[in-house]
Image (cartoon, rainbow, N blue to C red; front, side, top):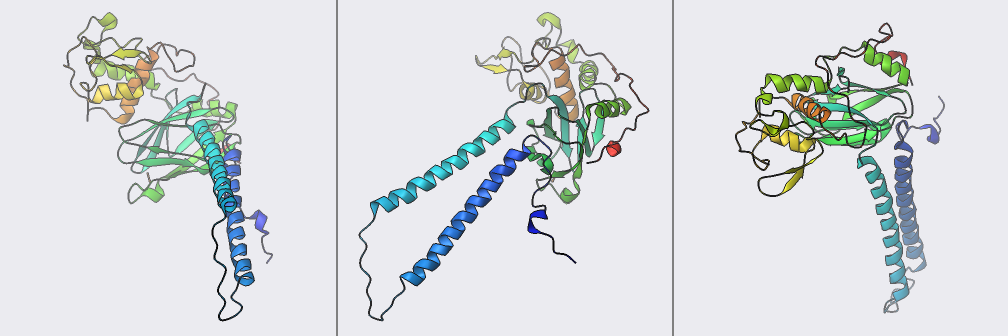
Length: 346
Ligand code: CUA
């Protein structure tokens, strides 16, 4: 049996996203730095032990009064090194947590103990995530119960899913293949089983996969249906004629509240207004809206936000979405193409 050369041992997972090379380089730098100082201190300790050992039983060493130059040196150098670590790490963090432009937005919900995902055209999947190669993919995530964490080692991305809040993570896959998806936050007895696969496909294969999936309508069109079935439209009418403010054109704008302050109508604000309508009351309206806490799931809230977004003016920097079509189904494509990502291997 031959011994595996050290450099062939896979210490790190594959690099499959644009983040991976820099994260690995940073990690390698930290490991190298740690090794360097461990060796430096260790070797110096041994050398000094030998060199300055007591040679006679009655030997008393010379008193040391201090060495300013030495003290400044060992203060300034580590300071510069640690600031370099901070600056580089902060740059990587900033790149990862800045909203990406022109990204494909996928909604992810975590639940004990599974991952649900919904694509922009409504296709859903469980414990799998199919994404196109070479395209930025933004995940908007929340949890139905406890904190989970979406971890794709090959992409070097990890972000928590927090109940009652939306979190965001994004990546740009650079290599087609199937990669591990883990839950990286202890969330109960089946935590270790909360795993899945991320399947990166060539653009054409991804389109074919989408076309083969079953869709119950886009999130926006489902949100529109909910909006009607929950009777939201009785109060939220057009041109502010109803008892509630109109929601057309609302998304992304500044809303004046009855306490004089303002708030941006983003996902978090809309979610809060559905679950706790009186938390931030719009100026000029009475707090008569009932709470929908417990009546709508996180997934349905996401759908209603998607609907409000679709009738709003701002699409966070990207081009405006077309008006939602009730019951829209994805355009029929080459449906005979295999729907699973099995044909794409790494
Ligand atoms: Cu979900 Cu651990």
